[in-house]
Image 1 (cartoon, rainbow, N blue to C red):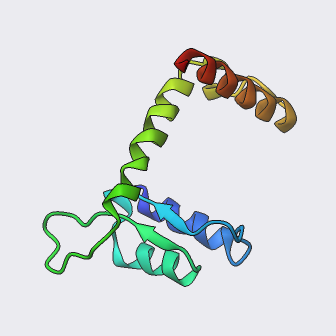
Image 2: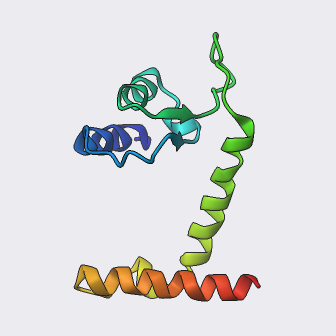
Length: 112
């Protein structure tokens, strides 16, 4: 199965409680379906998603904004180096979030 059904469940769970500062939702082609795009638009967010090559009526999207997806993917790859994060050793949410902050700080120091 693709990621699209899980993304729809996440949007439904989010409902109208989304943070007001979120204006764009960067998505890859896995979330390109009409239903998912309409759910994002109905929640008041602009979807930034390219069309699949076989779509008959492609739409326009902000290409410069979409390039930021690559930054998120690269950060996720770097955080996978912290085994403790992805195996979820921490039992308490506070400790887990604390270790995420620690991993992000270490990653930021490595990039300099």
